[in-house]
Image 1 (cartoon, rainbow, N blue to C red):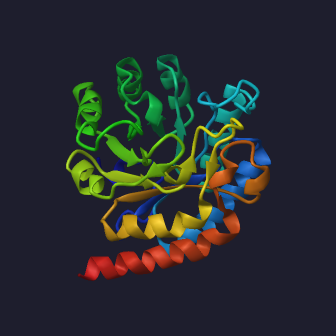
Image 2: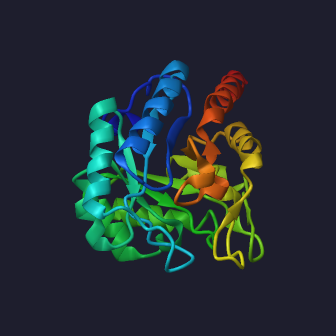
Image 3: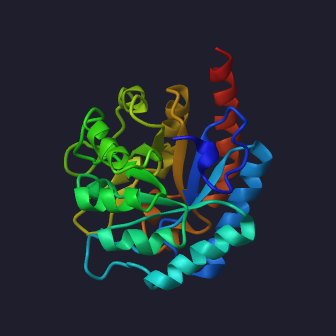
Length: 272
């Protein structure tokens, strides 16, 4: 996959990591615009290629009363408005094969959730839209097994594929990042590290996923040192009141300092 082929992506000529960042879920137009504007301001200053992320629907929830979205078309239209207003590409996740064609009308990258990455019909449907496909590594899968998921995309006639590591299950209620997997998966496709989901603490007795946002910079730094191509960070101006995944999201107020540090590390690594 070539970054330059992602529509509206800036700073692709700078030897920097790229960033997929935004809220877990689209909660409304104002919040999406507010987050996109701030992240764009930071990434423009630091010359980081930026893709706005937001889920139009959350299908994988712990409880039946968990927030799932504001309506598919409404959320997708907000993603399209973000792209148009700020001239940035967008990514959203899809959960059923029928979602692929619908979401492809509004966004530039289709993301396959980790729990669904082995679902052949879903992966193939995403590939056949011609959009860039981001495959999230299953928490239950080895890095080596992701070559087969990536091949489903390329065998469907689409070379625009990337892989995202979002941690591996460590017992029942914790995740761990095995950084040995990054060079392995980079053999198959450009590889992204999902920093915030890697710090989830799922399967809590309350039915609400926990997290360790205090470890975000630790994991992100390690990813940059290990030559990851991109980072995935969910961020919100009020994580405590976010409707989804607030426990592991980064407070938007801390994003600029984090990215500034990571860009400095990347420059050091590039010079070695």
